[in-house]
Image 1 (spheres, rainbow, N blue to C red):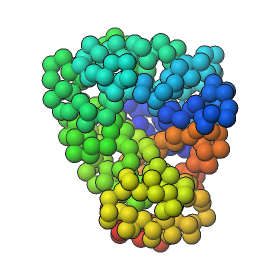
Image 2: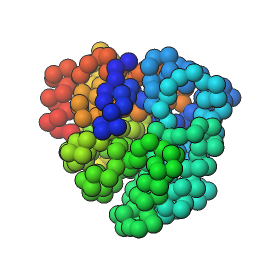
Image 3: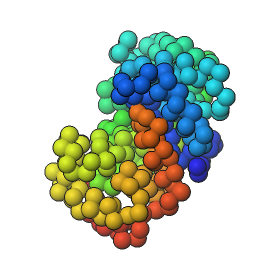
Length: 296
């Protein structure tokens, strides 16, 4: 496993990290056992960062059960606001949500507390007195988290928030993979100006880089133009020596502005397939040239 600087946090983060949304698995294995196997495998290959959220079903509870007695320096992040128990982005709710998460996770302090889906809160609710940012600042003062971040796929709002310099990290979904480079064009420059750690998630685009264009549900995340070029890009990726999932991760990790690529694995096999993506190095020159010339 390779490691990169996680922006101004100065932490060293594994180039492939673990997203906690699917730790419960597909139902064929006991959820606690499945989560344990994934975490053990992740730790064994050097993954040191896990991203979860109250919205992710039993994810925090499963992590809490597995992390008890787990001998590893895993950095845990979670989210606030989009909480099924209290869908609220006000400061008081942020603090209550983080305290619940810490209890479920069986830990005393988070690495990063993040705003879940900034578009659901909006600029005003985040930045106003008594808003989300104030709640996160109080959480830092109380020792509930070390750093604070933003997440979502509303690129204009994420860019605006990144430009304030108030946040340490940014996590973006769906908008950075070989067929879609929206986040790379505006958000990442703003993040770099403020030395933010950058997490890219849902790189497999709902299965597009698993099943290819036969996965019709994955195409819903692409614009009409992106769908038109996806066939050419996928065909090019299939000429690489790596699998489609590995190639998608290789492409994103070729961008040095990206701190880590998050894998939302539901089993050990899915995690291990992409865990060493950075060791492959960038895609071939021909693939990079084609993707960068036609990807939106």
